Amino acid sequence: MAKDIEISVVIPAYNEQENVELLYRKLKPVLDKLRKKHEIIIVDDGSTDKTFGVLKQLHGKDNSVKVIKFRRNFGQTAAFDAGFKQAAGNVIITMDADLQNDPEDIPKLLAKLDEGWDVVAGWRVNRKDSFSKRMFSIFANMFRMLLNDKLRIHDSGCSLKAYRKECLDDLDLYGEMHRFIPSLLAWKGFRIAEVAVKHNPRKFGKSKYNLTRLLKGFLDLLVVNFWMKYSARPIHLFGGFGVLSLVAGFIINVYMVWLKFWRGATLSNRPLLLLGVMLVLLGVVLLVFGILADIMVKVYYRSPRTAYSIEKKLE
Image (tube, rainbow, N blue to C red; front, side, top):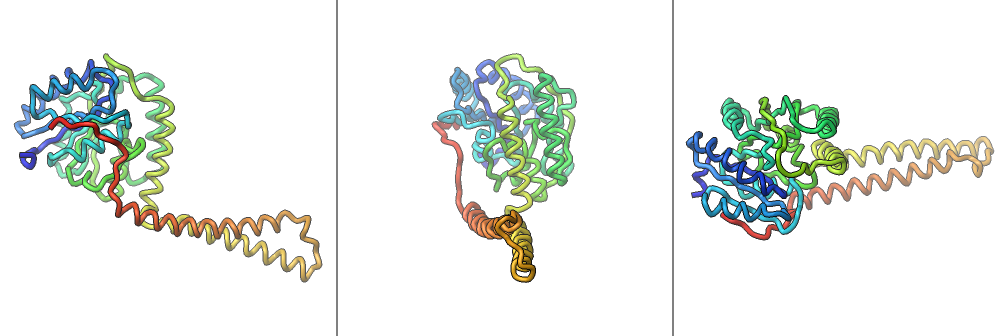
């Protein structure tokens, strides 16, 4: 029965036909040694190679292997989200399909989780990636730590993590936000720890990480930071700036009126008048925007949604 499953391993895979079977052969013995009922959920993120065919064969040989196939490539975040919604285990472990994460580190994550933590993140102390990829990751972690002072882990980009099931129950993911799951969970009050894990060089396939994903990740980081601070009441942000703009515009306009009627000054050649009017209009717009954002947030919290389409499941 699904309710008896203790550990779910969620693995996104995109064009990893050479890696998925090798990963299964390394992962399965580790899970068997734990002597806990488990499932391996592999999400085929719209692969265009033979990845799904290999996964279908694995499912046929081992009913603990479950496969979700997307109609097209929706991205790693969507794949994790689909896997989380499918997972039945009390503990959910995530990892990449490219063999760079080592399944032998899973017991270490679970041991740390047993100490009372809610989430345990892997820390790739000795990364086996290209120089450019490591630099991108360093910058991403710097921005994350700069914007979010609630979480202090070294490597938010490492996919090898362990979560208690309840951490992910109300989590909605989109864009490149899988990298910031620990930040979102820390904001919710869950306790986050990290352990050093091994990292292997990629042998087969190509890395999907590039400058475009870095830019998208940075923009998503700004969204995450905004969400953590103002998701409950966005009017506090937009309304605050709106009030400041209104006050500044009002003071400038009062000064302009004083110059006109008490000093007899000509205002047609004074840019300050235009600035005052613009600040008042901007203040009104920001207040209205804040009210609309507040309404949209309430609608968001009441509406179930998914940003991907599942073609088939092998359960």
